[in-house]
Image 1: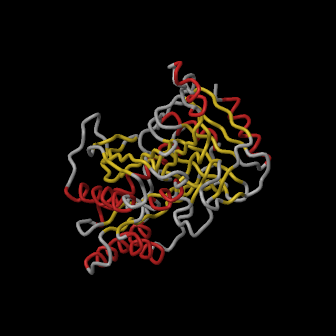
Image 2: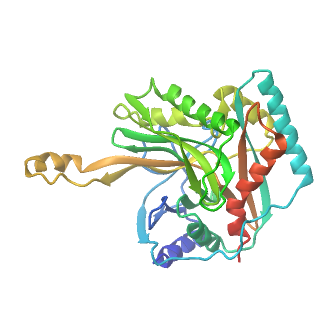
Image 3: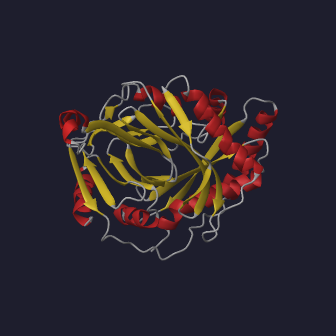
Length: 370
């Protein structure tokens, strides 16, 4: 039952104590992490242990929540029905004009070969007087194949989301990451037909990750590109696996973030354009979050000859970090929803606007549901 965990989180919220609730993709378990005081712990080098909440720009502080108490409950008996269909954002003419102009400026910069791709984002503000925990229940129900979280720190604020994208997962010295790009609305279970623009955009991310990691890891290889469904949307994904040197997980993490999927390529040029032209602070949107260097007990070797060795191998450090997409910031009676899309030379501004409107439906449908 999730209610006891919700009650504890509600008490922490009232007492202004940090907590995070989360469920991993396709897992029937809700995890709660609770910190005993309101201290703001900052990540130094990613060797720390806890739940990390990192911003888009790592020149700003990544926040570490201490795991003073950890509770886990099953989600099998939990169900919250969303009665409404897709949420639909209001058509803000001024915001649309600003965003279309920004996209056109980016396409001009691509034409001058300043960069090949840039990911541009915007925020949508919505009045919301609903109970935060009811909203989170709807997220858990609607997006079982995403990382669904509710994060709160009194000195930072409250964030919530349902992200389909793993930044990196580490078990011992093994890691898994992915390149995720391209967006199409789901029509039943029919797989989408991808355009050259979408295929190129995803390939840019895959190539970048390979080039960035190849000199920083012991080995790396990839799977075939595939279409995956996340909620009401389809994406293109390539999964990559490899091995890193002992105690070098932080190097892998810093090399991966931000990826072209949330920034662009070449990375520095695209990031410079974003910081100079988006005209708002992304904060933790397109940052990353999740378990950092937690100890996990692995199944022991059942072979009697290896029992002595297995005693030393049963506990390993694991990390599982997700890109903070499809998220929103909760501010009193107002919610800020963050959305974005990749811009290349083949982008059509009007279609890019429509893609961000489509992506906003992930959070809007749980806000507008009653």
